[in-house]
Length: 148
Image (cartoon, rainbow, N blue to C red; front, side):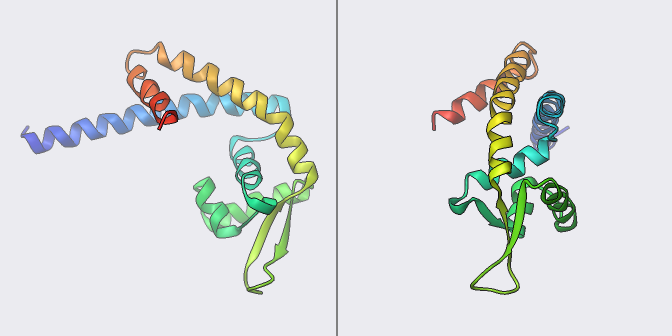
């Protein structure tokens, strides 16, 4: 194996480590959010992303990017959350083709109830991951990003 091949393997190993950390954290968040708030991780992500926007709304394309979902999967997700009264869709005043997804008061209330569970579970999952030798450097790197 040459130097170039070694570099590829190092990056691939880094990617596998990142995927393992992500999978572990996501599984813990999924369990905690489902049991406490009847939300999936991606549903929480949508509510959180909308709450961070001025006016609590985003275009569907932006929401798809924020959740790393396809347009059709985002539409199905928004439909479910809209059926629960957590989101609403409104036409863009400037562009009739554009549709905004907006957080409702009920969505904001559920997010506020779920956020402490999310944050505590995330902190606990990161603490647990830090004790795994393969994951510890990555967890430390995440902590360093917060200081930037």
